[in-house]
Length: 306
Image (tube, rainbow, N blue to C red; front, side):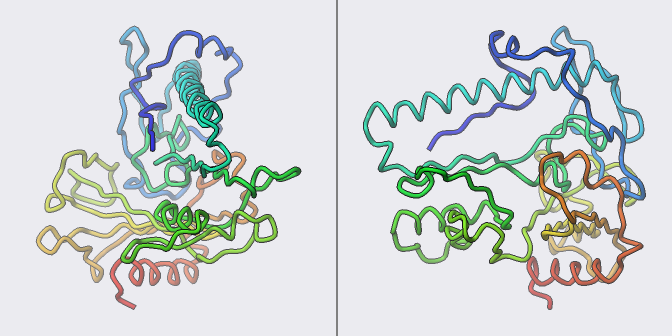
């Protein structure tokens, strides 16, 4: 197993990776502020936007940084991604050189996404799709390397599914008491639209806050008994739903019977090609029936209350 910290601020990549891109042609975010009807608790300022020379730029949920600054930061991000690509290529070359390429299942995935000005956010601490949804690629000898194989899936997968899925692909028994489920059937093209899961799950806390109606402060290095709120999020094929509860610092559980705020975003026809186009309008008031069902699922999955 190997991993890389990049792409992640502070940016670190050799100049040759920057030279791969023309900064003047790099696109900026289309939706550069927090969306319509989105509660302020959904937004957090978790990163200082700073140029290589030390110049910093203020920003907020309704005040984005200038486009040229966005291009500067995206340029650095792209360079860091390319640097990781180079290292991945080196690892794959070793498999070839050692003649174990055809005996090795390769799984590549990120641990989180990264906002680059979308929703007016930067970095990763969020329940938004652009943060929670990550790329994953699996190469299986004898399956994905056959002629004409070019397959992606819309099936819902959590990262906890990787272990049981790889175990099944390798023909190994699944150890007891592990989270996740075997999703190996999604590797086969005939199952590309089949789902075993109805929802994928995520949560993220909020600290240093007195009300829902303010931007979220970070919880880095903050113990759970000092959280103020917790956001629980479900992603189905058609929707992302997030509910923020007040946090009981004594029991370390949400206060289900007290006030809460909700987010609901329509993902019908989302082909994942441009994540900037989604989650810019909170439609919870127009779809209270959907929100009610998904809130019950939050309580069932996280706390077995239903």
